[in-house]
Length: 338
Image (cartoon, rainbow, N blue to C red; front, top):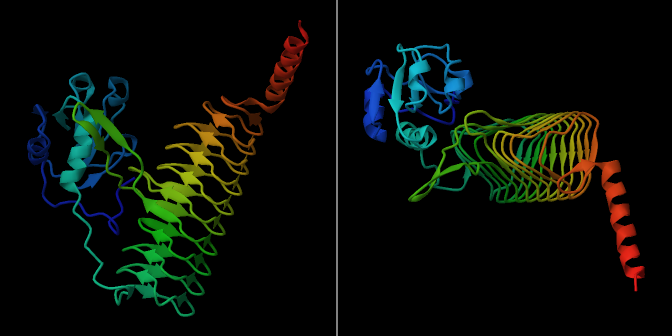
């Protein structure tokens, strides 16, 4: 996907040669004067977009051109020479540095509390006097925004929503009839970084959080925006207190998530999934529709649709209880020995 111009602005007129110099690329192969007009994930590349890739097998699938690719020596032979290739030791680190150079800082909107005259507030919305609604934010009819809540620039909240006290919404688009309880943080940057000899390099996140209609989010939850794609919460999802949803997660419609669950980055949760309290899911896992994750399960591999799992690492619920019974029998047997 392309970056959303309502939230992010790319510096104009930056060429492949300019960027190569800015990030210290060792070499530039291909056109030097291609102007960067977009930033996308590799598999969603558009003409004149900046992308990155470190895998030769993936790089050979690139069809769009011209694009500006931050890459390495191993990928160079399989990329069409009509593209601009910036050669760096670590494409992911080079990409992070490129984003810091290309993305313009957001305007500071902290001059005063209250409703900005550049915000759009529909008739029938109720905004507490201590709430802050920043420029270009929109609030739909019948929505309630409680004390101390903050809606940052560009945030869109639909009709008949309820935004709890001291919640902070940024880089997000909220549907209709959504409830967000007190103290939630929606749209903060995800936990993306790359290690170097000098320490961790933070990966800028340029996606959004998209929350569909009739979602209910308990107090104290954190939902991170996507890196290049979006974090997406489907309609009628119910989320208990103190849950964390990391960047680029997708949660299907009607799923239920109990308190203190943690879902790592790029996880896909199907429709109608049930999670007990304190479930943890490792990155890049897929949970099938209708799966049941018992409380405190640790999910380290994909879960099929309709499967019920328990334990850490999670196994089928039936197998888990068989294992527990065997352990108890073994314990009793050992205790009975002289």
